[in-house]
Image: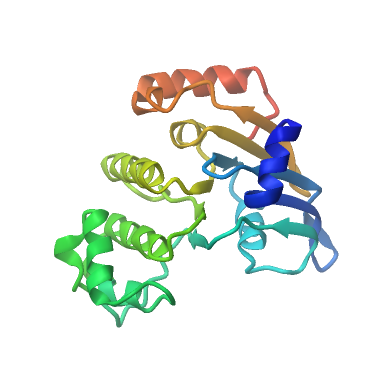
Length: 243
């Protein structure tokens, strides 16, 4: 990003400068440095085990054991984990209403309706599908009106139809809210379908190997064939990018 983009991020965006994250004698991350402007959508791309979840945890403030700094944007930061992490003894609406600042059950039900779960608000998590649990987790994240939304493999383990529906929902939510997003994924096409920019992690310790602007505008990302062609062409030009 240019100096102007960095200046914006320093005021109200995300600024990441992680020199290292160690677990015992092993260094798993670093150095990794990048910025994310307000409203920008970036994919954190890399193979399983490279350190995407560890990096998201550091950015979210859940892991403070790294060397370096993370400046978060003004406003709230919300994270959607790879597993939905819904309390099984609470209904979907109750899971949302428990979040500080989320509001009451009526607002929780309204948020669930926004993600297509209005009829399932009073169901318990084990009574609904994984795709529905993922949508409930998205509604829970939106309850705090985040300025930055962190998502860890939001489409993993979903069948193609549910993955496509979740992808459309994420894009609609980001369009409606204007939130910035950092989305961890191992899938190249998914990265381009969802994001303006791709940050590719590689190596051990993981480093930022590539930083690409998407070749597709947001309208073109709705066409799976265009996304597949762009993903193949982009990463042929960068053979060291994440698999």
